[in-house]
Structure formats: C-alpha cells, structure tokens
Length: 75
Image (tube, rainbow, N blue to C red; front, side, top):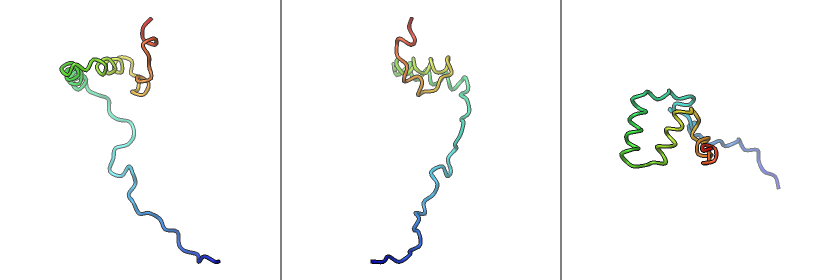
C-alpha cells in the first residue's frame, strides 16, 4: 500500500518567548528589598524571610538556597 507524498504539516503557533523579556533581570533596588522584607515580616512568614535574607546576603540563586540544609549553614 503506497502513501502519497504529503507536504509536512507544521503547527503555526507563536514562539514561547514572543513578547516576553528573556535573559538576565535587573537587580533589585534597596527600596524594593526593604519592601519585600517588611511584607514578609508582617505576614509572619519566617521561612521565606530567612531564605530571602540569605539570598540577598550571599547572592545565591533561589534553586541553590532551597537545596541547602541546616547543617550547611550552622556549625
């Protein structure tokens, strides 16, 4: 049984990054850092506040912070 040669059908959908800003983001300004800290304190979200403070102080990425254990931080 022969199949005729059909042209390749390709989905015409927009690129995933069309209209999005990709690449490195701008650093946070000090007023934004303090605004985030105040909101986390008011919400009594101690875990996220500790992770945020550690991220700002150590300049680590979020994925590296989440992998950390207490043993890595405490002597």
